[in-house]
Image 1 (cartoon, rainbow, N blue to C red):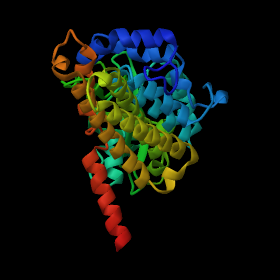
Image 2: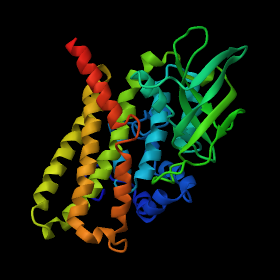
Image 3: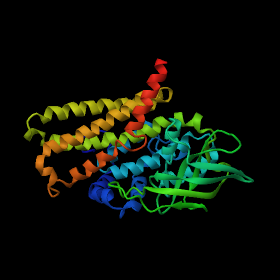
Image 4: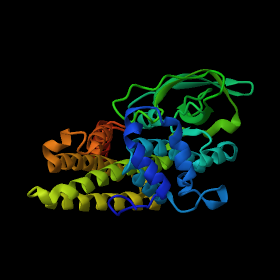
Length: 363
């Protein structure tokens, strides 16, 4: 079971592996190659994927639960899980059966890393950023040129990434998939991150990369992205749910020794449970497709709960939190918590988007 007794139980072999290696996954890339195979062996990539397509059935809520359970033990592994499972969701939501047939099996088996690559697209959808990759028509399809500055799960052993691209001849921007071993694709060295260093996070450049019709995930990004955004953000929010649970569990273990903290821990845990329930139910019933604002507010609220939980864990531990031999997991969770507000879409971007929507509604 999870450390807090909540959420989805993980297979014991995976739970033990994450517990042993959480610190190494956060601070180095030594085990980066093992994360996807470990998650695949545990069958987690099939959660919420129809059985007839090779998955384990269920809904996107099951994927959210699984990512949260992994995040309780390692945000690095959960970050990789989110990127990979989100790419799988793109294949499931694609109207192009050819791209699904080409990559879904390999993704479920963990043979390649799946990289969402759509942070740029989500910013584009909100009018924050222009698309960074251009597509030019060729005799056999398209040619891609451009790059993405920050993509997770670009496995050195092989990856496939999604990206939104400008389309030729005045067509709407499209969402495509490109493989890391395609001619013209160049992966940078791992980004020099403060934490989550085992997540295979890097930049990628594309120069004269050729695509065919079976590489198109969605021919109209503007029409398709709002439908997939709830899964993108919902599974991303699962990282916050798991991390907050872990910090609150640690705080509650120490709270009886610190006057007044037990009640605060209980209040935060109640708020977290309420947010997690709303997240799961909204992702399942489709309400966030029609109205994304409540999902944005959940993302903001969960990020704030992560910060509150980390601070409560620090206060419950006191000065002992600065002693690595007391509990090294606190320092890791503190670094992990610093990442939550800035992962795209960042809290600042979401707050700007909510303000724009409020102004438009008032007008």
